[in-house]
Structure formats: C-alpha cells, structure tokens
Amino acid sequence: MFYNMAGIYRYRVEPQDVDFTQRITLAALGHYILRTAGEDADRSGFGVRELNGHNCSWVLSRMAVELERQPERYEPFDIQTWVCEYGRLMTTRNFLLLDDRGECFGAAVTHWAMIDLDSRQPMDLRQLEGAAASLVDREPPIDRPRKVAAVEADDVVYRRVVYSDIDFNRHVNSMKYLEWMVDRLPLEILGQHDGVRFDINYLHEGKYGQSLAIACRAEAQEWRFDVKDEAGVSLCRASIRFR
Image: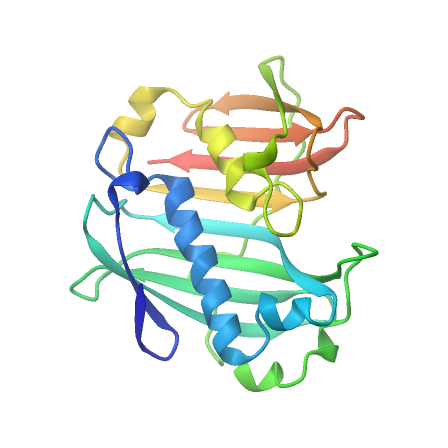
C-alpha cells in the first residue's frame, strides 16, 4: 500500500481477499476501508497510536457501503477519504472507491466515537487538538448509515467468540460480524449479484468467550441480521441489499 496524494491511498486486491467469484469479498473490502481510516487519522495526528498514549481509542459506531461492483483479483484501486464533521460524541468519515482509471465503483460513510479504554465510555471529541483543522467542506457521497431495526427470526445460529475474532481493542473485530453474516447468505446470491449496499450498526462490544446468537431474516433482496449475547442484548445489527 502507498499513498500518492493527501487523502488518497492505493491498494491491490490480493489472492487472500477474493472468494470463488475471483472478486474481493465484502469483509476484505471493509478491512481496506477501515485501514484507510486508520492511516489517514495517523497522518492527521489523531490516529490510534496517538490516542492509545492517552488511554483512549477509536471505535466504529455505524458504517454504510454502496458498491456498483467488487474489484477482481490483482486489480489495483484507490480509496479517497475525508472527515466532514465532528460532534461532541461522533465524527463522520467518508470514502470514495476508485478504479485504476479514476472511475468510482463504490463509496462509504462511517461514524466513529472515541472511548476511554478503562471505562469503555465515549469521550468528548472536542478534546482532540487539531481535529477541526482536518475537516473538509464536502458532503458524504452516499446516504449516511441507516438505523437497522431489531430482527425477530427463527433462523438463528450460534457462535462462540474466539481469539481470532478479537482486535487490538480486545473486542470483536468490526468486519468479523460482516463475515459471520455473509456466511448465512446463499451462494447463488453471492455469485450473481451486481451491486450491493450494507448498513451496520455497532451497539455493544462483543467479548472473548461469549456465545453469540446470529439471527437472520430474508425479505426479497434484503437480508437483515441481529447479533445478540447470552443475555439477549444486541451487539450488532445489519442489513444487506443486493441488486
């Protein structure tokens, strides 16, 4: 990976990123989007490494991604990112996904919070020195992440959170939820669709050793998911819509 100008980062679809269609998976593309957020925050002076020195960190609250297509194996692509707003508890970071000709094939909008690593509670973003200087007067490229309603479904599978599911914040990695959800989808849908939009709401932290229930409900070309802990508390909800 390298960046060629401010806010634009270049990648290549590697063999481990693709599925049986030879296209990048939704979760792998999501990882590149989140990696771009981290790289750009580091360059701006308020990345995870800087925040960890003050006993705090970023956590993803909501994410929306729209794709016209999914790049193929070995295809280079760029991700452009910018922050358009800071509130007291939430910031909005946006992304454009560009092919090697500079044509847009997708976009994303994310909402982030900053938490205290001891209390796990949100912190006031106005404490971030220099954050306001990074704002770009440019609207999100797609609709902001939508609120996903609770899912009542009989189609439920269970999964225990293991070592490979957790990240440096010691909770379930954001894209692991998406992997679990996509695993519930029919292969014919994953192999034949053209475009997709997914919205994810991260509600509570999933922890090592928990047994999680993953509920799925299909309606036409939309699948909705609700991941709950042993107490029935929703940790993550999402919707995936195909064209």
